[in-house]
Image (cartoon, rainbow, N blue to C red; front, side):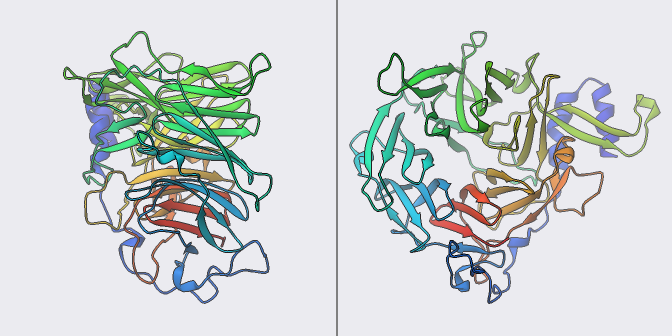
Length: 489
């Protein structure tokens, strides 16, 4: 009946109002992490003869194999991580220590600091951006205000050598109270109807395809590290996300992913000012950019119109699916799948490559997005993650934070939880949503399972800001005071 009401409204010409209301019809049921879980089995998190996997005390592991690793200080808020098989690098924030950069080594199964602390000099280092490593001996990380550090060493046992560069500021945000590397979101209620606190997202980061092909971004600008005229490598402005037709809009870049030099993606967003130079409520839209051998192309872009996103011609606007189980002749509708524009505000704040020419991402903290670029226009689908409850009884800023994809599964981290979504591009392309319902129902594009982070019967009530791995049996989920490592299938 919901579908009949929806399409009746569409035919009556009020698509926008119904598109927003459709997300409010979902019911909330307790998630698997809402109740204590049994103690992990005796062999959880141990090795299977592979010396690269540390042996852990199962009392520090969840039943799904998420194990606590030892951080050098309490109060560290880990914001990003870049892993290898026996090593990982992370960037963290601390109210007492400032910005810190850490390295994990499998031989000790513990983290240590590797920075030179210059990132905490007066006037810099208010917040951390992204971290990326070309190898176990070369890393990049970014901090406020638009600084990118580059570290190298000759071997894991050798000391690090650091240099830093300041990125150009091309932001159109002229409000002196705003930090150009932070974007502010006042989110809609999530799909369960729960309210959420306003959130900030770092428009500052670094990512690369190889040691010689590294990108950074700050505010609305994408930089490429390269040598010009035989000089030393420098951060060269390569693309500015701006719109001369909407000078009142500020734009941001949030995340990057890809498969190689000719398949690089950047997720961003736009926001509009109100009359007081503050950000308008309900005035933000997603932007998705892809770089190939032919240059940069906006795959998704929209103009803000009365609080809704109207997608531009020539781009793959985000659509959502509605399934009509029976025909409604009075509206001229046959039974089947229909797609409608997802016009409400929803930034795509985190992306991961899903193979050449495609990405998955997190939108608005409540949706799993799937985007494909192709010569015939491609597609962009928003799949709302349904029937999801988080452990916290308090109002949380963002339910879902990040995504990482590997053949066979998409992994999503959020507030105190990790979701495993089955690898189903055909299903994701419908936009019908992701739920924990039995597979095969017409109501959903796919299903998820909760990869429990409950340890010793205690749910994890903290944000997990980033999930990333090298395989489905070498995964990290990091966040507020936690660096969880999973080495089990």
